[in-house]
Image (cartoon, rainbow, N blue to C red):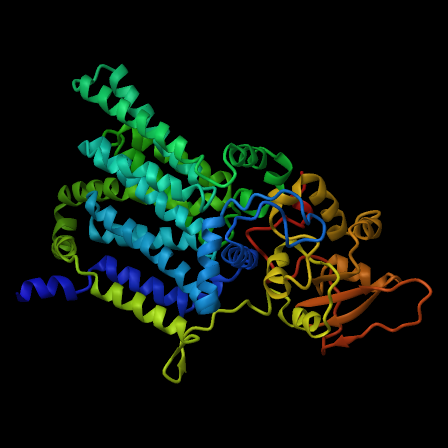
Length: 552
């Protein structure tokens, strides 16, 4: 009885990882990162519309320039869920939900590393690197569920290849039906499916001793792939969604200008951690070349390529790499230690501790602490982030990154005309001002398209005819970072007047010719400083690059 209770109450290492990540992301130092992207704003408002109208939007409702034009709300299932959470628990609930998904994903990655043969020490190190690399996209966006589904996909396919556990494949088409309505990352599932199908075909063609078994596995994978494909048509837009995604991902202008689709800049800490994982992968392939299966080599190549191709792929790439390389490096390290008497004596106790902890980890299945943290966190969210008299959660948009006070000014003065702002701010304005005020542009780049966004960049960069383009968009209000090039141009233009300014944003109003009416003007205390360029703290991983070096 005591042993049974111990299994239920004692936290495993994966439970501790889950608990620590949930706390850090919801109440700790990592918390502000979750609301570091304004796109969650239009996701929430879309979800609330879905709950109110009981239908999925098919036309744009948030912008003045695209209003009424076809729009694919291809993440509608996520939108509906966060809309419901926001109604009952506010931004705290939305952020906590994201924290739980992220923590669950990495706890599962850690447990899978151990189950695949990784030593405790190497598994911990590899997980820390993966978490640090993935922190580049710790955001309240639907992509975080794609991380979890990718890990589940890999576990199912790899378990089928090594153990013939066909029952795991049965669930993949079912999960795909959810994934396709949640996030465009469902394409990763097909890539992994294709990799394991190729590996199975290769075993058959190479005359593997278990040729008949390889053939049956090939058929099972092929049939699962067909069912997965059919499941992707279970969405509100049918085959048109596939066409839309293809056109979006094949648009070279968008792919070359949206930050998250650009190759990583290895000057940041997350990117440096990913670089370390790449180096460890090289070592793992070198020392384990005889142990790696064809599928593992192909998954490794896919993870390395996609991670180097676009920053948005770093989290998924990191998880796949640690799942494959942690067991390989653990085996190689064990052999190296075994061949060195001096090292063997020095690390004997550590190895023994790791073995005992790994055995304990496999016996603990209660997850009581993880369940307790989730229940307590949900209770706090439903009580405005408070536990008794103490505020533990206060999820909000950072006023140094987003124009919080400037939008307060717009709301107080009942501005109802469209507002032009950077695409990275559009989602925040939608969250705060819809339906009274619409934006000219936001970060739904697939909706606006390349032609419109080229005109948008002319305005942001202050190129020739920028004012004419702004006029064609019928924008009489402009909200931009206070030190941006456009803010400097508007400050000098006689047709525009600065009506509000603070340390983050500047708001301008177009003045009609021939009128003597003074627009309302509020200016907070600022240090006299003029600067052209991107202000610090405004970087978003879901926006067009405004820097000159981002141009083709």
